[in-house]
Image (cartoon, rainbow, N blue to C red; front, side):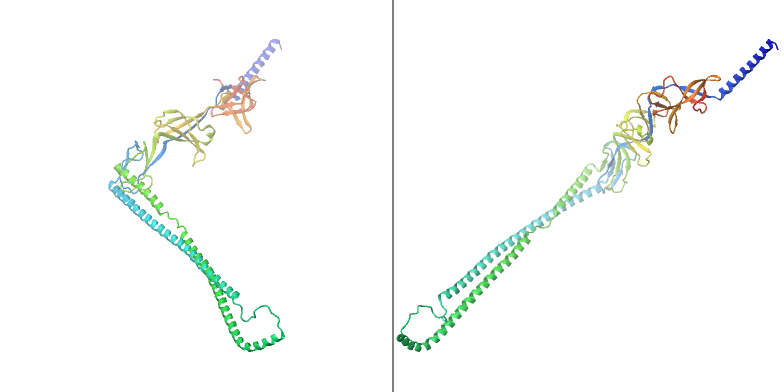
Length: 483
């Protein structure tokens, strides 16, 4: 085979190989995922919280009048805005006059009852004082009389005892021989005396017996008198003690304080209440039976009916708009960490879509009916939004500036954490190829559109896969999407 033919065959082989290489690249390129890439940037991760609600009056005011008033006319309707002093309803003046007369009569009755009660108390106090004075007098009299009786009885007893002792001392007992000096006598004299005495013995024996009997009788009489005097003295002591004890008890009973009586104080309280009622009725009469709005506001409830009588409850309820209104809007509890008191808020009025800013959140509370919802409160001054208007709110919480920010679609998440795909060039059989490499990252913050990564995670030269035409994995060959 000649050289020329060999070169022809070789050239044909190379041509065939070139064709197959081109076809292989075409097939491989068609199978590769088409991607778009981005590079990191700086910026903030703002969190937007949206909600809707309704403007309400800053507070509600209850309007009422005295109970028992017949409603003559209702001058407003629910939902109507009224100015301060505007008439809400009228009461019947004839009925009002009758009630004023009744109230005055009740006051006069209370006055008379109070006078009677004071008079009864004064008489009772005087009677109690008289009783106490008499008991004190009886006690003193019992003490004086008891002492006098005791002293008198003691003196009588002492006199009887003294008389008995004097009798015993001054009058010797005749039945006992007198004591004296015995002089010895001679035998002759003794004999003469015996003759004389023998003649006198019979005469004096009778006299001695009579004297002894009289002496004993007198002694017994004096002793009996002393015993009786002592008994009288002891009885006087006992009587004095008993009489003083009874008089002391009577004085103690008369000195006991009377039971408390608050009738006067109760009457005074009733009188003051009746005066208040009368004054209210008189003021209502001076107003010609007209009950007006205390503030500028909107009528939210009418609880009275024409022709019926008023009760002690609320007659009309007003939403006070004189000091602005309050918006209560609902937001998801998932956004709780992005909403707090003082957060700036933008308000959009549903009717005309006007945006109102320069106001902040006044408070955040959990919804009482749904724990997954937060109630956001915004207080507004008068004239900004009318009560009852539907509004949308938007709260944006701005973050600090981050140096590594990527679109949220470039970030991937799994149970172990977050990762991105980095675009890299590698040498292969077919030449230089683009490969997607998985790269673990740490997320500092993110929202629905952007994510901020921790400092030092990526560099500004690295290209990050932001989107792919199909699912890619670590090491997948990719090609740039033509724009």
